[in-house]
Image 1 (cartoon, rainbow, N blue to C red):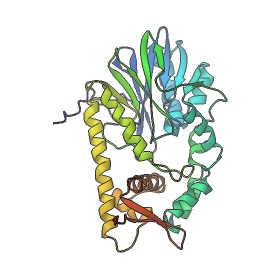
Image 2: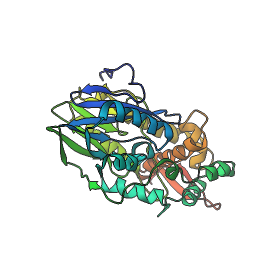
Image 3: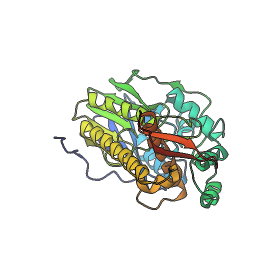
Image 4: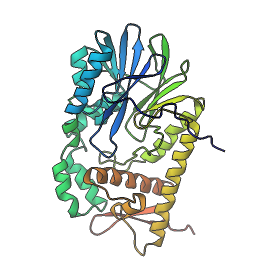
Length: 348
């Protein structure tokens, strides 16, 4: 029987304040202007200096909250480096702003650093036009055209351009911070090369977006890799958290710190298994093949705004691809150019 999650802190620290959650490990929370309304950030003591983990969205509210932290907690201490777990705007948005203030180094994986520049500059398959074409190919109707046009390059609106240089992190690297070793764990599926950090001596893992306590991590197919199977990569990645002691204190980017990594991995695996089964049932009950947009209501039983719809589409396609690659569905292109899915044909 899975043990229940344990939450050592009932409430987060107020915005602009800092709370110590383990020796030398400090928790900040910043607001986000979305349904997911916050992000957790972390400060690690490093001798007489500090290491920052993630930095929040590039907006006035986050800058103001950082100003309070810089004045009340960081003060004259040296910030030695800024580690960004992945390129998404709530994690990387103010990286350059903080680096300019402190003169510290930016540490990221190569996949995340390059993705930030590519997305910001509309390069490769990351332009709004390419993304919108991908959504249409998966059935999203013209009623969303206006909202998508207004959204434009959301990333560019939310991020200060990253510096033209960084320090690269690789899976298995060990970073010494304040005399303690932190192991780099690279995970896939949510972002190209997402970093988590594990300190065995403290029994602490900064999990980023890979292991939240309540919500499910977004796992999406995007335009740049239209045949991708990110759900398989994600499920393979989160199995690594079973290698940690079950009572490891998990510090997620969203939600409260918790203990019970094995239980949470099992819950996420079960969640995705149920969503896959829901899709199979819906498709089996349909008289005709179905496209991803038609299946959004099967996966998301709430009204979605434009921002949420883009992520929901990517996630629906990710689950459909997983089923196709597992031989449980087949995919076909209709005369209208839209991709649709049907039950796999039984082998003779």
